[in-house]
Length: 277
Image (cartoon, rainbow, N blue to C red; front, side, top):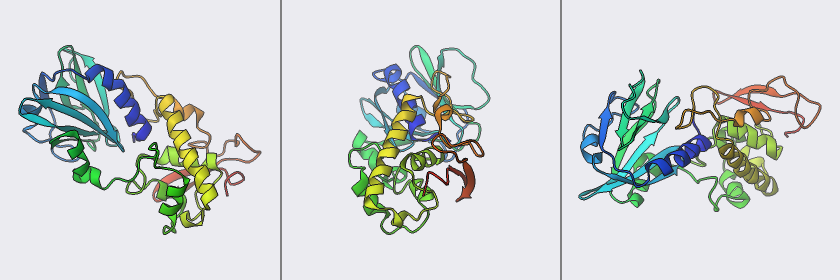
C-alpha cells in the first residue's frame, strides 16, 4: 500500500508537470471506487487550472480553479493504485478508471483493487482540511511540531504495543508497515514494548528515527514492493536498503543476531530481538 513517502514522491513528480496547466477534459471509466466518483466532477473540473498539488497524510490534493469554480480534487491511491502520466492518444489499460486530459498529456489513475478514491471539496484550499476524511487525521511526522516531547505526551495513555500505535493515522499519518518497522529498528525499540512505557529520551530517538526513515524513503523514491510505481512508470528503491522489513531469518546488519517476524494487528512485523528492547 502506498504510504507517505510514495505519495510525497508522486506529488513531487506531478507538480512540475501539472502546476499552471489547464484541465481540458475529464473521463470517468469506472465511477465506483471506494466511494463513488461524483458524476458532476467532469463539469466542475473541465477548464480549471491546477494551481498547486498538496499532500495530507496519504491523500493528494489538487487545488484547481476557473471563473466561478474553486476547489480541491482529493485523490487516494488505496492499496494498489498509482497515478501515471501518458501521451495523448495512448489507449487506456484495463484498470485505468479516471483520467484528466491536459493539453499535451493525460494523467490516469490505475487501481486494480478499486480501494482508491477521487472526490471533490469545493472552496479555497484551506477548506479541504474540513473534509471528513481529512479532519480526523493526526500530525504530519515531517512537520516541525512532531518531536520527542509531542510523541511522549501522545503515547502517555496508550498501553498497546508501539508498532500498531505508530500506524494509527488518527495519531500520526503516513507511517505504514514498512516504515514503522524500520523506524523502531533505527531507534532500538522493540515493536512489542507498550507505547506508554517508552521514556521521553527514547521518544526523542524514535521521533528522529521516524523523520529520518521517511526522509530517506522519499529520497530513494519510496518502496516498490508489489504495485507501486512513480508517475513516469519507474520504481522506488527504499526496500533494497531496508534493515529489517521482509528480512526474516536474515542476519542483523548491526549484531550477530537474526531478524524475526511476528504478526501484530494483522500485519507482519520485522525486528531484531537483540538490538531492540
